[in-house]
Image 1 (cartoon, rainbow, N blue to C red):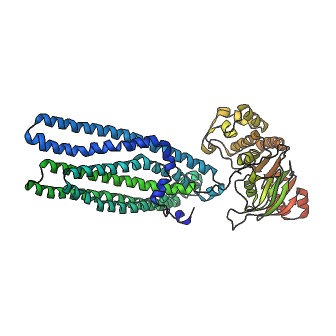
Image 2 (image 1 turned 45 degrees about the vertical axis):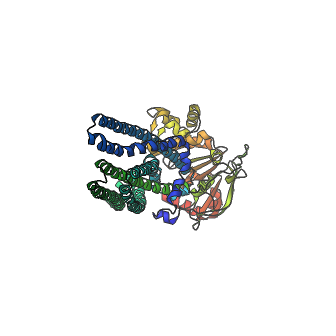
Image 3 (image 1 turned 90 degrees about the vertical axis):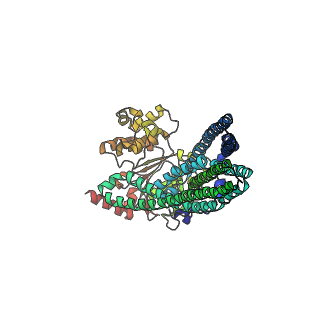
Amino acid sequence: MTDDRTKGNPAKDSDWRLLLKLIPYAKGSTKDLVISLLLLVPLSVANAIQPVLVQQGIDGPIKYGDLPGLRWICLLVAITIVVRLGLQSWQGFLVQKVGQKITAEIRNDLFHHVTLLSTSFFDRMPVGKLITRLTSDVEALGDVFATGAVGIFSDIAAIFTIAVFMFLLRWDLALLLVVMIFPVTGLIVFFQVQFRKANYKGREQLSELNSILQENIIGSSIVQLFRREQYNSEKHLAVNARYMYEINQTIFYDSAVSAVLEWISLVAIAGVLWLGGGQIIQNNLTFGELSAFILFSQRLFDPLRQLAEKFTTIQSGFTAIERINQILHESIEIRDPEIPKFLPKDGKGEIRFEYVSFGYKPSELVLKDLDFTIKPGEKVALVGPTGAGKSSIIRLLSRLYEPNQGRILIDGVDIREINQKELRHHIGVILQDVFLFSGDVQSNISLGEDYSEDQVVAAAKLMNVDPFIQALPNGYQTQVRARGTNLSGGQKQLLAFARAAVRDPRILFLDEATASLDVGTEYLIQRSLDRLLEGRTTIIIAHRLSTIRTADRILVLKQGELIESGTHDQLIENQGMYASLYELEVMAQA
């Protein structure tokens, strides 16, 4: 994402180039679009012929007292009204149908693309801003088709047809009205350009508002605990004020277009009355022709007024296209290889880091030249101060991020040459902070994969989690609220153990996995965990060093570098950083 976009400046693509990007989505609705466009001809004729029928009625049956003739003309007017309303309803339905279909397709593509983006994208994109683009921006884009695109062709066709009928009736009055279209069009274009700039800034401020809202809702307990209500309200008020300012700008430019059109239409009617009235006095014009042109002047500027309104909708749509394109053009950094490799079936989970360096920002490395091997079935603990890079190792091995240099191999295969689905199938992760989805307990263990209920129950029993689940109101079918708010931290962590067990992974990560459990539950889980770890390569992150004394090997990290490696006893004997950390822990416990 470029800097100018981040600051809220519109992208440099022209309107037509932006509109062309929607053509692939419209191709699936070609039939409905063609029918909508074909309906423009009878709609325009039915609209333009009514003033002519009025003129014929005034200059014919009304002038000569022909009542039957007047009835026939009234019947023709009624028929044109019915035809126009019927065709308009049909066309409106088709256009709305196309708009909704295109909106759904864009929303699907955008959601699919977002799910493929790397974790680094979500590190820099606030959730509230992203949700705005996935919802309100997509809806605005759908409105381009639902009310704008075909409507513009309809309005242009109406103006053209009315102009033809006017010139066939009286060229001089027709020329007066047509000439007035040009300055109106220029003003509309000017105000719409200004509207678009203000609309872009307004949507950026709306994204900021949604971001603040999402942050405060998720962190509501922290807001209240630390008495930040007033501070956060003032912050929200400031962004809301900026949003209101930009929205007021869009309202001003939109209203300016309506006001200009209203005044121009009144001037046009006055001009027709002045020029036509003079010609009536000179017997060069009939009352019927003057009445027809008054109606023509109203109908000529009505499409212009509607055209201006549709331009407003389309400008909002162009803004949405720009913002959506910024997401769709975000590169997918973590990609599957074109010709993937598979982990050997007889592999046991050997992990090798070969001179791996990594930084969330290229200039700030958090891991530096890591070079180590974890043997199959080995139980290895990662130890070090906060910020040493322990969690980053897990993220790299799971391929949530790519290393800046070096490579990572599992059973001799570079993980970049393995499909992500295949790689993560062999990796189980149990984190301290467990995320649960809305749904039942069973679906939160299987996570959409085709594990049977028997497999899920067997995994829960293996980890001694089954008794806790059976105690829930509806057992495995108990509904879990969003983010698992109806379960305690310890209960959520128990489900994480069952998640890992049902997948039977080759490699297992434990990141403070028992931190939220009480002593009794931790004892039961630890016994089950020993069975789960048997024969698997395991990486453990633990801040309580007493829990990793039995690890086969301990890797000590400091500022992203591996400074010590060995068993607990060896590291204590070496009297290095690990020994210092262990002594501090013992003193703290004492």
